[in-house]
Length: 121
Image (cartoon, rainbow, N blue to C red; front, side):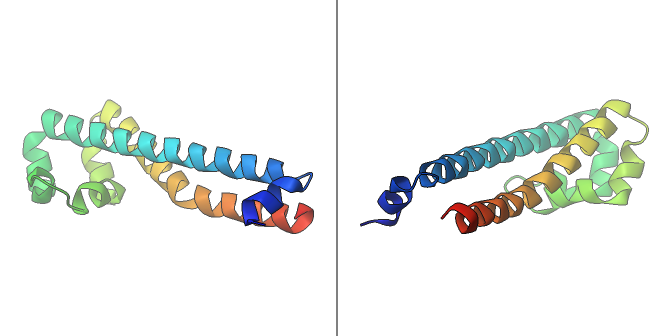
């Protein structure tokens, strides 16, 4: 018998599978939201303050993928630079919070799922 069939045959196994799927969908939605928020922040920053953006991090203007495009907004320099623009600062703070939640939530969900499997598996 396969693992999925065995888990589904258990009274609580189907609930565990459903919770795991809901958690995975929730994390995927959170990751997509974080990516969209980061892209909007980068675009707004480059359009609103192009001179300051290029002086602070020239890699922001390089086409293609570059980790500095994301990591720049975690620095204190970005916070000081964006302090003059409340809208950009709020967007940066939202992006940082979403990114941190995106990094830690999957580990929390896996831990909760492990506890459920131990208790009801």
